[in-house]
Structures are given as structure tokens and as C-alpha cells.
Length: 67
Image 1 (cartoon, rainbow, N blue to C red):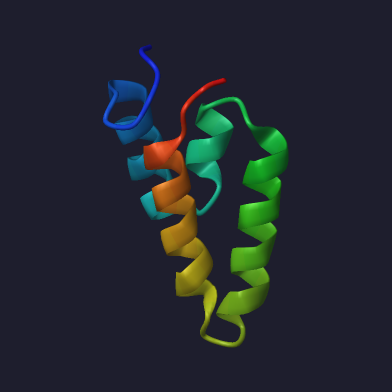
Image 2 (cartoon, helix red, strand yellow):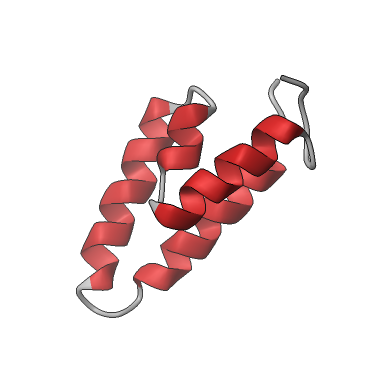
């Protein structure tokens, strides 16, 4: 997979994060960030603010550039 925003890997990861926050980060090989985003989204959905983490998860996956 190529690196950087707009790459096929990042688009696939963003689509995964659209369905489950953190899944895209897991696909990219970032399990700690995936866990953080999943847990935050789960907690904040109780207060109807989970959409903030959900959007952050999608954007983070889409814009990730491997170092």
C-alpha cells in the first residue's frame, strides 16, 4: 500500500472507521490509537457526543501518513 492522504490504504481505513471508530487505525497497524478512539466513542455515545470521535477517527485514518 502507498502512504499518505488519498492513498488506497487510507481510503479503505477511512471507510472502516466510518462503520466502527478505530477500525481504520487497526487496519493501518495502529492498535493503541484504535483502542483509544473506540473506547472514547463508546463512552461519549452515552452522552450523544460520540459522533465527534467518530468523525475524528475517519479523518485520522484518511489523513494518516506513515513515518
